[in-house]
Amino acid sequence: MAESFLHTLKVEPIHGERFTEREQMRQAVFGSIAIDYNRARHHSALGYISPVAFEAAQAA
Image 1 (cartoon, rainbow, N blue to C red):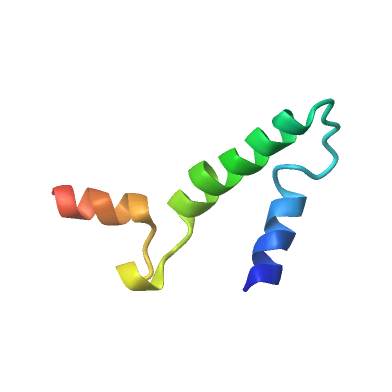
Image 2: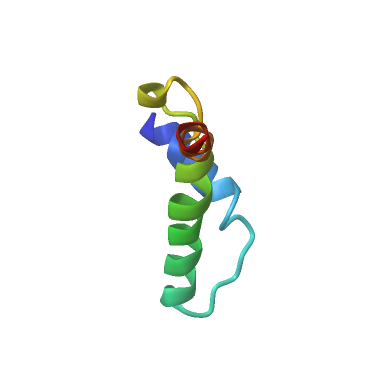
């Protein structure tokens, strides 16, 4: 599972990017994980739906 995640991280947000500062890379990686990956990934604990979809269903 970790290998799959790391592969996704390498090919989506940072592949081919040239960062001039470490902070830029840190922000790109954080944004990819916290904003894109965690919100879109289907979670088994939520019935294999994304957290956004789960929250929308709970609010309805």
